[in-house]
Each structure stands twice: as structure tokens, then as C-alpha cells.
Image 1: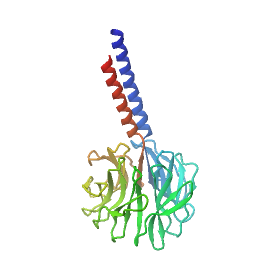
Image 2 (image 1 turned 120 degrees about the vertical axis):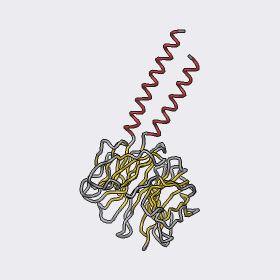
Image 3 (image 1 turned 120 degrees about the horizontal axis):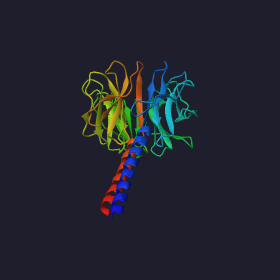
Image 4 (image 1 turned 90 degrees about the vertical axis):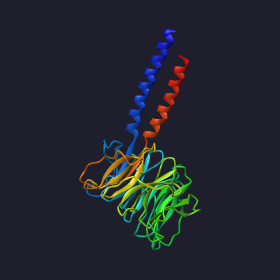
Length: 316
């Protein structure tokens, strides 16, 4: 009897140790890529989710910006001017193996890449005559299809994590609104229709909510809404400019850019808008964060350990 109790106790201690190890590993794996002017031009940096361990990934004299994680965390799509007009490029997560995916039809270039959840396609904005439209590129087949065809600019696409829809910003009502379209190009609808400069949509990991920047109160703030455009609420309230929201993998936090302390830095807050803390602190401009990995893996592992712990308690 005593042996069974000791065995159960040892098992519980091992599980606690494993949980702490997994949590530490998850925190190490959680990373944020962002655009910065620390080198004088725009470069793509990566840092741990706590703001530590910063490193330059792009290392190029031409501007590199609009970074976007691939779903498996192995590649980064971005916009670059390194070959003339702006184009969509991809590099490995360590900054090597850079390759160009698109060639712009005009000097306005291709911008704002976003990956499909299966990693097979990238949506981006490209100029068509006088306006930008949303296109989708099949990476392996090099097959390009046009998703939108509006009279005014469509840009800043964001692919839903469930793969079903793409949110984007459009000027077709003469002010920035956030639209939604099915991934096959059908069922276009205006989600915000506010006329108050709604921009930079970012999906929650469960595809149920969208964070975005808006001037609903006259100042640039971060808002969230349900994926059908309902239940809009403001998360930030500050005289500075708040922009570029991106969700943590567990959906509990949102990183964003703010100049509330004098220049553009990356901050993070709880999804309620509380507990705002700064991640970067540099005289240069830090912009366009994109968050990958860590937290969701940690929560899943912890849940499995709790189930095992419960089993041990029942069978000791």
C-alpha cells in the first residue's frame, strides 16, 4: 500500500517537472516577427514573445516589411523592394534561402502577404490598372487567381485559421472598411461599414473574432468584433496611435504597435484590453508584429497532464 502511494507521489512530481519543462520550452518557442528601422532602413526582426533575444533576419539594404509566419513556423513571407518594385518574397525562419514569389505588374508592387492555413497558398494585394485587388498564389504550382475585382483599392488580406474566409480592407465605399469573402471568391460582405477608417484585420486563432485598428472615436485604437461584424468593442483608449494587432496562439493576448511613449514600439495586452506592457524599447520604429507558437502548445500539454494526474489520484 505504501509502495503504491510512493509510486503515485513520484509520478506526480515527475509530471510537475515535465509541466514546468514544457512551459519553459513553449515560452522559448513563442516568437514574434516584426518590421523595424533599427538598421536605418526597414528590416525584419524576430524576438521571443517576452521581448528578449532579438535578431535581424533579413539583413538587406533595401526595405523589407509586412512579415507573415507560415503555418508551420518554418518560413516567413514578406514584402521587399530588393529587386526594384515591391514584391512578395519568402525566407526560411533563420533568414536564409530567400526567394521571390511574385513579379509586380506595375511600379506600385505587390504587398501584404498572408498564408493559407495549409501553407499551400499566399494571398496578397496587387495593382490592377489603377487599384489594388486581392490575389491568391498557389506556391508549388505558381498558379495565380484573382479573388476580388473592386473599383477601389482592396488590400491587407488576412486568411482565417479555419481556411474558409479571407478578411481584407477595401476603399470601395471611399473610406477603409473591413470586408469578408469566402476563400473561393464568393459571398462578399462588408463587416464594418462605418466610414471611420477600419484597417489591419487580424483573426483570432479560433476564427471567431477579428481584431482591427479603427478611428471610431476619432483616434487610432484597437478593437475586436465577432467574425460576422457584430459585438464590436474597443480594447485600447489612449491619445497615442495604436495599430497592427496580432493574436497570441492561445487567443488570450494581443500584441500591437503604439507610439504612446514617444515612438512606435510593440506592446502586448490581455484580450480584455487590460494589463498592457511594452515588449520593445528602442529609439527606432518597431512595427507590424506577427505572433507564432508557444502558448497553445503549452495549454494543450498542461491539459493532458492534468488528465493524467486525475487518473493517478483515482487509482492510487
